Image (cartoon, rainbow, N blue to C red; front, side):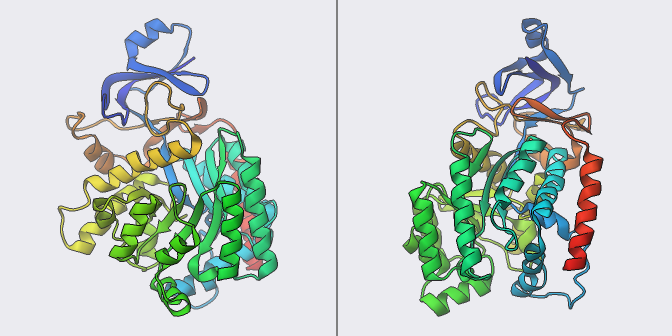
Length: 440
């Protein structure tokens, strides 16, 4: 038995959202109960006790759109003209980098990113992977890193036609093999990955959908991220991106449609009626200069919208802050986007992950999977059930996390990583990144 107590317990349960001097009791992989610290310490006198020292005790964060391999791009010199448009970013950076990856690069770029996730309190991650130079076995390398680091993950390989049919078929096979591998594993789940409409011709998209459907899988795909994707779809197929994906059977309750920056009212209605899960990546959208996704309108229209980072950061609170600001800036209205970003991160991400892993995630309630973080924060103003989000938004960042527990296992305690030698991992990652940069 493990007790994490003596803190402000933020449950994300509307029935009992905040417990002062609260405590979480964990038995094996699940939360046994929550309550007052003194009472639970008396009830479980032999339990190990982690003292939050008056800080926040919260559910671990969930990232519903991530690219681990992007960690090897940090600090890299392109040795080429700076890209200005989205397609230039893909061609000059990401599509050169992913082709250069080896299996060991895939493992260590994921391991390095996962360590950062632990340090920022992210405990469940939906990753979208690509490595055209080493497709087969690549998801298993990412999975091995996630298993070593102790993080709950849902992985997919983004199939595309940009590297020819052989690489595309390898991507299909990798998705299928990994989906089968994850069957029955409570910590490992999989989706069928697709890159984007503009890199999937009709024949390839049909093969992917048939393969994914035969396994009962949802899909993970970049959707209308840039105007170039929209224009390509209109020029080639005479329809919008969302309409094309709907016609092929890609959309649905199990599918992640990442970005959706350039969607119209009809597409929003399709996303709603199909129950697809849209993931907002505001920091990435700003950095790539592709626009501001109309997610507030989507949510008003009943679309399920979550929050991701798209590899830009491992800090979900950073993404939350940007989501809070980008819509104010876009609409020139300081009164918008207050509740919605918190709903994306703390409610919708939790609901989608819970469906995927067939267990309660993102809430500290009895029976939920035991993903818990302690966040170093001593509120300078009153903290209550009504103003929790204000304190989280303006008072803390990911690096405020001091303790991270996943599935009942302590991965980081008082900022010390427990399950691996982080310095050894980062040293090897630097060596591999340097070699990759030279190949690049």
